[in-house]
Image (cartoon, rainbow, N blue to C red):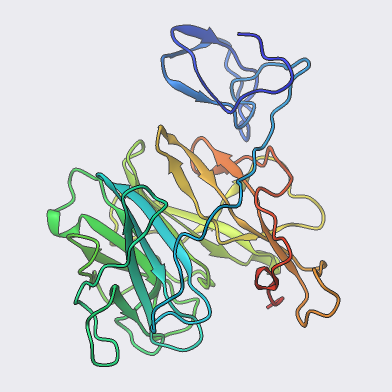
Amino acid sequence: MLLRKTLILFLSVAGNWLTWNEIRGDEAKPKAPIRIGSQLQLFVDHFLIDSMQGARLVLHRPQRAEVALKMDKPWEDSVMYDPVVIKDGSRYRMWYRTNLNSPPFYTGYAESPDGIHWEKPSLGLIDFEGSKENNLVWVGDPKAKDKPYTLCVFKDTNPKTPANERYKAVGYAAGAKLGSGLQGLVSPDGLRWKLLKQEPVVPPKGPFDTHSIAFWDATREEYVAYTRGLPNGIRRICRTSTKDFSKFPPPEPIKMVQPIEDPPEHLYKNAATSYYRRPDIFFMFPKRFIPHRKPDPAWRHRGLSDIVFMSSRDGIHWDRQFREAFLRPGRDQLNCEASS
């Protein structure tokens, strides 16, 4: 196959030998080729590229499409955010935070046959103003010690997991400061939730005021969580992993393959995920905060946010091959944020 102007992102090569001369983030260089067989290969970095002539890696950008989920319920206020979407059997499932302005903070549920057309089923689980005719699955309250909020839900495919804990979630440890860690929840179906234990499953080493992401890494047979750190006053993404979901070690900053540019980038809201066709490879779509920029001189806050793209082959070392934004903010003032 001859690649001329650009390299395509995905390529499956059967039975060939490929050599490579560097591992990003690792100074060790192999002397022998590696056999890739029929395994799908992703050109998101230079892992499999020895050299290029007349070709370059190109970052594709998402295209704006229709509204997927409308804000049309009494328990949904001016902001619906931090959704988690998974493909679960023949349907897509979504969990999202329904409100921002005042507690309690609710987690809503929606489902779709195709990932485009969504419905909010009436579940009859959570009381809202005297009625359970709603799509709510959890109530979070910053003042209560047993009600974490801003949940990240995932389906646990660990074969050792009991059926009544098949779905898991992490959320802000409630009833304390934002640096108090993450609490864990379990569910048999993703709808009926209970707190795993009062103590945080991810210990205090915050702040945790972001959407922390957790999932089961089937390749490495461990649970992984990505959350926020603030070393030297710079927003950073941190990682922790464990064999036991009930007890994670303290998170540590992820390692960036390329040097962080000067001034350092503020990265958080990580949206980490494994690629479903190569679950040993990870993607991340972190929010980048640019404090010195303003979309409108009249806007009361300083700072602008966009989304960048990163990839990793071990979940620890992350490659910023593409320096430009993956998702640009546009002219919507809701894409701005305060500097705090």
